[in-house]
Image (cartoon, rainbow, N blue to C red; front, side, top):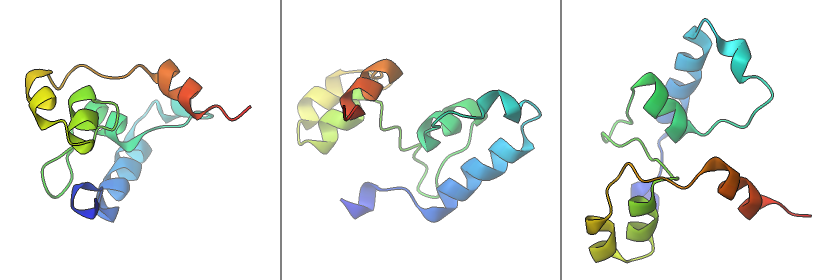
Length: 90
């Protein structure tokens, strides 16, 4: 579990890239995922991964379905509105 997690440096890179963005005000008031920021700004973690928690193949690989994860391309992602409804508590 911990070997596939983000490092603190990855979160720091996300904050640094976001602070250097001239249009940072367009992102205020929203929840930003570090994996989405890594894809947008083009940085990776120290292990070379973007830790995209919305990638369907990474979700399947994390659940032990490695053969299905190998078949599904990495660019297929769970939409943000689905993740929003999955976390809705009320």
